[in-house]
Length: 590
Image 1 (cartoon, rainbow, N blue to C red):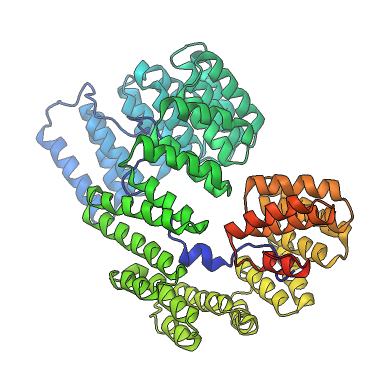
Image 2: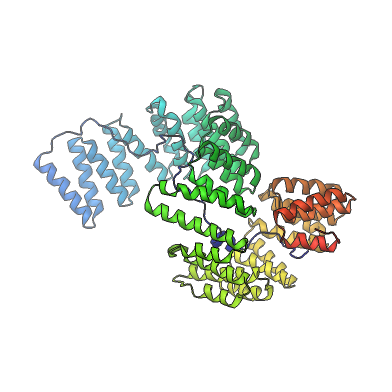
């Protein structure tokens, strides 16, 4: 194979060339009217107590003390004024002064005094609850949490329960937090109206505590009370994001029934993050059909079509997005949207060989924060026309005011040289970058890829093993090393163990499944290899996976099926090195 290490792009691909996820005009998939446990506007008894001259003077001195750098004295004076006047607003001000001074214990004392003076005040109770959480005094929160739940009006309970999970997600003892929230919500579980949201809140906390099975059970109970409810769907979405596809049917049923664009968009983003392009595209198309003015969906769809090299479809989606830009919320957001769109237009034109038009699109961009991205695209166009030295000069001329900007420039130059099929030069530049950041796993991984490209296999192995030792959760290193062994037909048992370890972290990663399949193929286990490759290709139709699947079919005497798969691979990416090398080696005409 031309490129034994797995087709995980250099870090640059995620940092520079690919535009960030954009949600210019849409909100996150939180139920309308969702609130946090923030103070509300309420009228506590005692707010209107008249202030005598002495009390007014004490308040003024307290504010002045806080203003000149003596917050402790100022807060003490304010709390004393609150007690004398029995004024809720002064209690609140005393609490906030302590919070601003980062004096947690004083803030708690002031909030508790406020709550004691006004036991029915939701504001006072909320301040106490939030301060206790901030101080990590979880064992003391239960009565305050119960009061918050008891005083929440029925229509607001679902969103308040969700806010509670957000508040308690910050604590260090996740298991204790989950137990406290479950205790506080016990009285709500039988209520057909509030029960589903209560179960979902408990499920969110259980997932945060590392108990996904308990979270799945919470979904089942919420669904039993109220099939198709939004609270269960949100929890299912969170589980899906964490790799638990058992929860996906709940999400799918909800979006199909409710047709909520925000929820669909969140679902599509998760599918894209899992590299499940076909179902993600189905959700994006559904959004654009049901909500044709949803700008984010059009842009995300266009980017996905660019990724899969469907240039005409991508242009059409971008044009729909461009027409919606004037409707975005403000001038700054509109400017950013035009910039991102122009970069995509330029990329499409470049890939189709329309270099002059690509440069015209780039000329429309002012630069600013996107200057490096713009110049990287200019450089790529020059390099594609055989002007690599000029292309490198374009990137080198971009100003770099910080170490991070300099690093991005160097990564961009490495990517440029690599795409120009200059692996020796790319390796030299990447090695210099690795020497500057020897502990960076991403850079070390990219260096290993290029070391392998130039035949430095011992160095490649050393770099990947160092990553594994330093960063055991970096599953790409396990996969890359295992696949390298499998590709060379050596140490196949170790290859299988390494790739299996990678699958523990990313069980549905199609490229890691492909690596395991290739190991089985090299080991002579054709049946297992075929089953794994068919699963990988179903998860992610990709030219490299197609190359492997076709070769296994071919070796198994299934030449017709192999040709069908290879044809699909060529349609996906006719320039893929692995696919081209496979066809050439086996003497198959494309």
